[in-house]
Amino acid sequence: MSDHEIEDFEVDSLSDTSHMIPGPPAYNIEDHHLPLEPRSTCCYWVWTLVITSINFMAFLMNFAFMTLVFSIVLLPTIVVVYFGFQCHSRVLHSNAYYCKDILDDNSSSALIILGFVIMSPLIVVAMAIYCSLSRRLRLFLCFQPYARAVYKGTWWKGYDRTGICCCGNEWGSHVKAWV
Image (cartoon, rainbow, N blue to C red; front, side, top):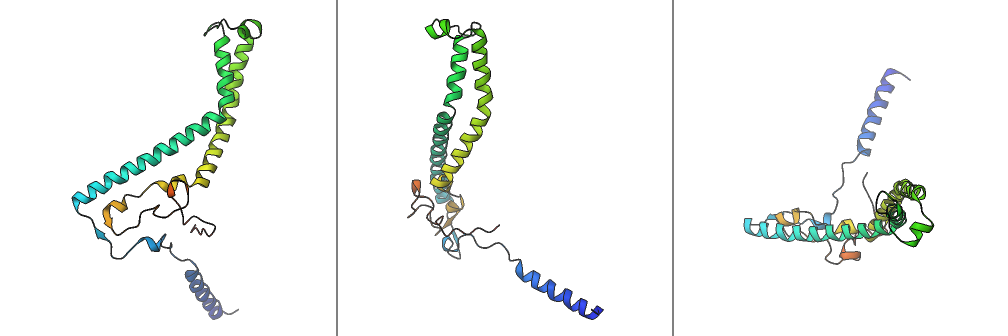
C-alpha cells in the first residue's frame, strides 16, 4: 500500500469508528415533557416532604425484608451460638438437662466456634438471596428521585406498574441497558 492509500484508510476507519460510539441514550423519553416547568418554593418543599416520606417507607420496607431474609438464613448460626453460650460454665451455665447431660465446657466452646465459622458463608448466601429477591420484586425501583419535586409535569414511578409496591413496569422482558 502506498502512503496515500494508508492515509485514506486511516481517515475512513477513524470516521467509521466515531460514528459507532454513540453518546448515552436518554433513559426514559416518555418521562420528560419538554420544557419542564419548575415548581414554586412552597410547592417544592411540600413535594420534597412527600418524596422523602415515600423514600423512607421504601427504605423501611427494604430493611424489613432484608432482616427477614437474614434472620431465616442465619438461624442455624444463631441457634448453635446460643446453645454454646448458654451451656458454657463461664458465660451463663444453664441448669437445663441438655447442658448437664450432653454439653460440657469443651463441647460448648466447639459450638461457639462452629457457629462463628459457619456465619461467614451464610452471610454471603443471605446477601445473594436478598439481592436476587429484591431484584425480582423490583424493590429498589420504589425509590422516587427528588427531581419529581423540582419540576412540574413529570410522571411518578408507579402510576400503573406491576411489581411489588407498583414499581417497575418498564423492567419487563424487553429491558435494554446502555453499558
